[in-house]
Image (cartoon, rainbow, N blue to C red; front, top):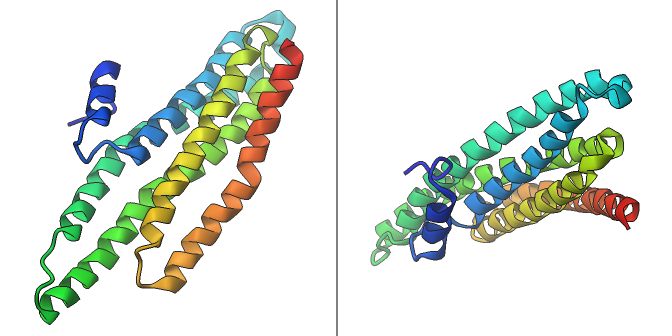
Length: 209
């Protein structure tokens, strides 16, 4: 099932069901794509306007980057579902004998690593999007700055959401050195980018009130 191409109501219905996918990771990727698109919208409403001629070239560059991020985040909606299925199967593997326990442990390490890779990528894309939104909010059309603020709030939510999908999987890893390495990368992103998104939001809010 192509979760990034189904109607919105269908995606939400499946999300609300007991189906294992999509889940929080896929939802975070989708929210990140929507937030990025809102920044792109600001750029679209800025280019071609005499008032913003001095930033037009920069806006086109930002829009190109935003479009690529949107596409990548939508792809990650699908990838998140793909990597979760093997993980859900691994959790159900038998462990009655020592051989079965060892095989389950071996498979779990592989699928946990894969299951972490997608939300990590979602986080990285959301960080890039927040950086773009900061510029869209600062230099884009004042008629559309509210959209930049909404986009920043959504990308922050997507970033935080994806981080939980990393942490829940690193918690189960036996290779603690690798798990802590991933946790440290997440921690660094969460230290820098949610405050940046908040600053964008507060800046927009201050200009609107």
